[in-house]
Image (tube, rainbow, N blue to C red; front, side):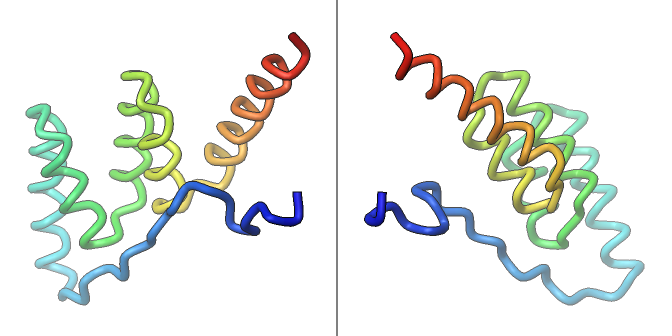
Amino acid sequence: MAEIPKKGFIKITVPEPVSVNPSDKAALVRKGNQFFNDGAFDMAKRVFLSVGYSDGLIRLGDHYYRQSDYFEAFRMYKNAPAPDKAAWMIEQMAGIVKEWLSR
């Protein structure tokens, strides 16, 4: 156990949001929302990560979770940050591992 990295095995990089004026940020968020609503989730993710739009990242996390892409959902929740959702996912993953070990 001493060899396990303190930050875990999943690399979560939190990019620094780009510094833009509020009107440009609002325009980018609207464009990201349009991408999201059109199903262009990768483009929406790029926009939301670039401007640090937490609500959009949480919605992306929810989308990835519904698609069973749990690691990407977790990554979005950590980047948002949405500590409650990330903690809930950690509990779920720990429960799965616990079940595997009890077999």
